[in-house]
Amino acid sequence: MNEPSPAEGDISGIGVDPVAFEVFYRRHVEAVGRFVARRVDDPHLAADLTADVFLAVIESAAGYRPDRGSQIAWLFGVARNVIGDEQRRAARRLRVTGRLAGRRDLGADDIARIEERIDAESAARRTHRALSELPEGTRTLVELVAVDGLTVAEAATALGMSPVAARVRLHRARRVVRGVLAHPAATLAY
Image (cartoon, rainbow, N blue to C red; front, side):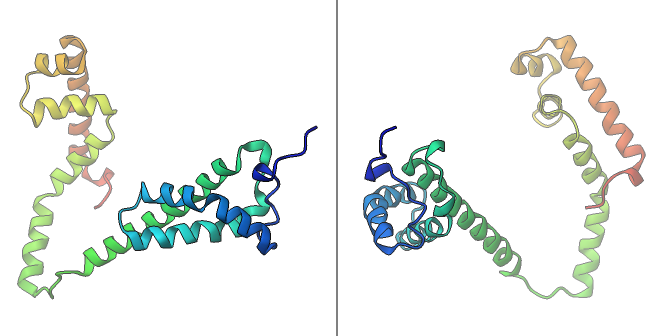
């Protein structure tokens, strides 16, 4: 069996060997930087994520297995995970700041008006829930007919099915929606 080349050798020790890490880092930093830059448009975030990738590499290098793929493929997998983690954190921050930004204290009249609106829309929420339980193709058919105003034949053509099949699916979907609306206690509260 041939000795692995230094470029594709064992990297499991880079977490404890600074020289091995430096060689690995210098060999791959440009590729990782490009990988990150293709996915992030903020230069500061790109630099931080590139550094985070190599920190993650130090922590997980002992788990690298050459028989599963090249170093660069493994490294891009680590980079993908680091970027994904950051995107999830950013989405959470955005949701939190979105909840807090622009809020004002609600008075009793405001709350009463909103509660009335919520109560008035309860049938729409139940209908939406019933539609979400339909198979995607059937839900699309219902939307084309009920929301977009197509005839059943036009919707069938748009979905590549026969008008007869579309009528049958639409009939079944309406029965499901009517059943949910007739039994509001069986629906989830929003």
